[in-house]
Length: 61
Image 1 (cartoon, rainbow, N blue to C red):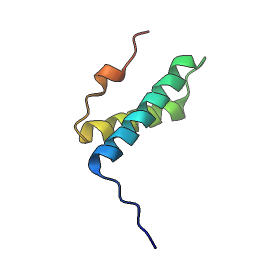
Image 2 (cartoon, rainbow, N blue to C red):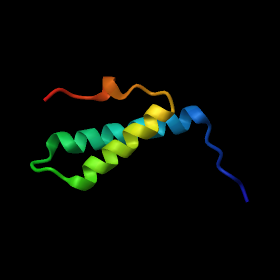
Image 3 (spheres, one colour):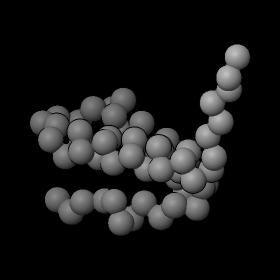
């Protein structure tokens, strides 16, 4: 059986892409979604622990 190994940079990029997708969803939502807010907060904390500054991904309302 072959194992799929993912290196740190690939894992970081995957998490950045996921965070950006969550931000895109939030931008187009009409009402507050508590689950989406929780997912955004969790993903942001994950990225910060990986040394990623998420401020550049934020959009201005």
